View 1 (tube, protein in one colour):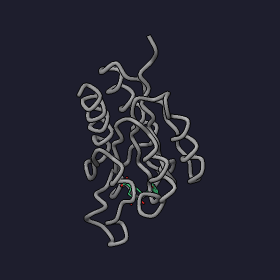
View 2 (cartoon, rainbow, N blue to C red):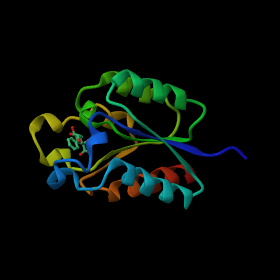
View 3 (cartoon, helix red, strand yellow):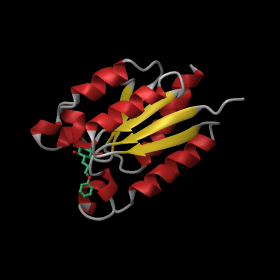
Length: 147
Ligand code: CA2
């Protein structure tokens, strides 16, 4: 049987997690969050494929490559959340559940973080729960796939 792959996307600067701003984003590294998501996915018969990029076009390419190959997408678009319409459009062309995840709660931060251009094409958003959010997002994708 083919692997049921969930693409986990991490946007710009998330590769710096664990390095600074622990009060906002926690002290865990991105590698740690990916490994938590991987374990949660395995428990549900899913496989996580992770791509981190600081470049919008690379994230768009990764979303295109998921079409017809991955069953779902979990995305923390980083600051691209707030203005990257190319990511919005690429996600809109993906058939399958999309869950947006944020470590912090952008709605409780600066006004420019209150808009998400990804939210309108996502099934839902998990925000403000730190690293737990990655496990929650995997559970959400799994349950959406189960219908
Ligand atoms: O809360 C989130 O997960 C965010 O997506 C994180 C983005 C931010 O622009 C969004 O508004 C909310 C920023 C990620 C930057 O992460 C850093 C980590 C360590 C040091 C510097 C940046």
